Length: 233
Image (cartoon, rainbow, N blue to C red; front, side):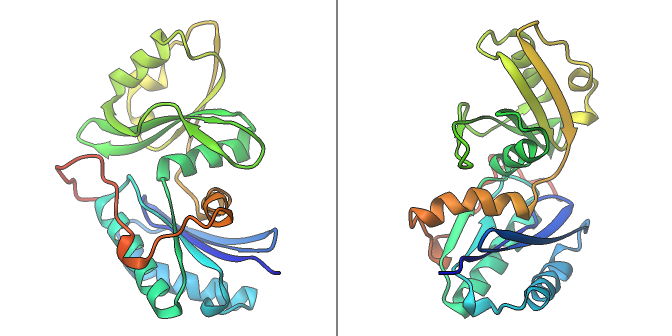
């Protein structure tokens, strides 16, 4: 039986859409600062038409629950709820920080990732991930949190549990000299990449929940912000 799954992301400046048809992935992405509400539905419709499937023929929709930009998260969840209600489809949630880990694996094939997203006000959303197998299963070995660049740098320099190859991936870290120039101990090989969460990586993460039938109804879809004070993005 054919597998048909839609994913889309609006949590950062990058707006992306992806479809999985069996093992084939089709995607579109654009930089859409403050224009997510205008761009996301036309991008979804265009991709559905190009691939030749309808919304009602899909198995589920994967959405990004955050953390990320407050407005972008709300737009993404509202769109996911509306599409799921209209087409009677289940929802699957993923974390934007876990999506970054999956993207770093796609690029570098490194199984240990520190994901960051710019939280403004001198802080970053952050989490550490380890890939446990080759089936896109990631373990978050530190809870998703919000912290300063200095705290993240200190963790990289002083945490004796961090060994082997790591990727520092995401947005915001490159705005801080303390992270750009961080010195790590000899037990760590650190690569760095500026990147945003992408829908194509959401597909592979969300497949785990889909296979285990871990679904949400539209009214269960909730955002994750990690801070009470909201910064306009």
